[in-house]
Amino acid sequence: MDTELLDLGEDNTLLLVDDDEAFLKRLAKAMEKRGFVVDTAGSVAAGKACATARPPAFAVVDLRLEDGNGLDVVEALRERRPDSRVVVLTGYGAIATAVAAVKIGATDYLSKPADADDIINALLSRGDALPPPPENPMSADRVRWEHIQRVYELCDRNVSETARRLNMHRRTLQRILAKRSPK
Image (cartoon, rainbow, N blue to C red; front, side, top):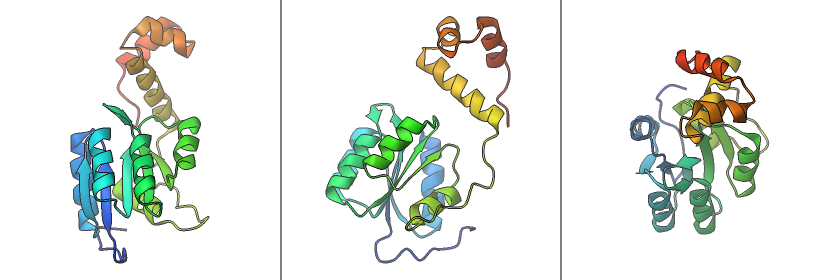
């Protein structure tokens, strides 16, 4: 699927909620090229306001935003428009959050980095048909690295606390943090 226009039906409105401004702009541009009418929000508050004022047919919501949890936006959207198709995006994929997202009405759940084609496949998939697997999934090394980075950030960049929580030797963690991210 290149940047061809999709047949989205009558309502092609899309709400994108993410606090990563560069990612948000790139994704908005890619989705507009594919025929969506895009509305963007950079916070939970702005996302909820958009979902309430102009409930879209489609939404892509980041799970962790600076001012809260993206699932709050999903709930607000579900209250106003139960038929909307919502994909939850996150850089920190976990089974528990995937289950929570689907329980409150998300159509699908994708880990970042997800490209526009992955997102469109998830948004437009119908019924029990699973979207095709991503063309370039993250390697196991990359997933491990992302998890370590997430825990490191959650521990306010405290190496000793991060090592304790990961049940890892502090020196081993320091070596991992000193390296570049794997592909």
